Length: 333
Image (cartoon, rainbow, N blue to C red; front, side, top):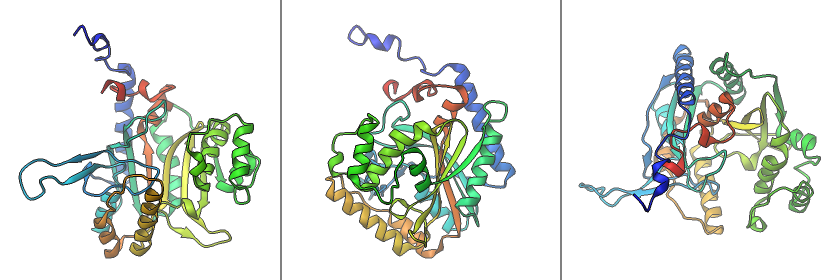
């Protein structure tokens, strides 16, 4: 043990035991909320033969070495249970939720851990506006007596940029966005010269706008169609995604959609994301053909949202970093 002196201390949990007890309390309240609402808890595999195609997410890879015809099969740890849950929805499950561990390579820092706890749920016959109301009810219930929500504010994505960044994101190009970030002395990652306009928008959001959101619960909706991910597109001038994000006390907490149900459109988006991966020299991963088959069979009209449980716990106990609320964060795994 002389060569590993740090192991004498870092075997201990990083989070205080009171914080771990609070985590258990929040999880009980989450399950009670959905049980009372008649939403079914489900459990889906963490390993999949397919991977997320988004160029902004990286999956951990593994392989099966056991007996049988699938020996040597390439597998991916899920970044979200979304695809498997949508297969359940297509099979007639009705409204469902899941609490699970998810895994994202390359994400580590004060607000990120490569392995984290996600709450994801889908409500049939809801759109994204209905789901925003339920997110508010969930947070008010789960945090009751622990952390007040404060005021609740709703913003359109474009208006948020105009108010807090001082520019219209639909008119500003990369040069204007880069100059804004330089004026704000923001940290610009290496390689942004090859980034898309959406990447620059995301950077302004995280570096300039999020720190100014202040206390309370903030919903942002009407994202550009190019940032739809798995959301439906609403016609208009310009068209916008049926998507929202929720921030609590300035921290991004949840991301929700009125879910896309068109299998052909979903395949087209997968293909576009794989093309972006190729252009950026990122690993090419297999798209989820089982999800596409499920969509083809008929996905019920539904809205879904993913909420970071570890970040919620951070807010509930006033922690500054995720490592303060995890028993064993990445560096102690």
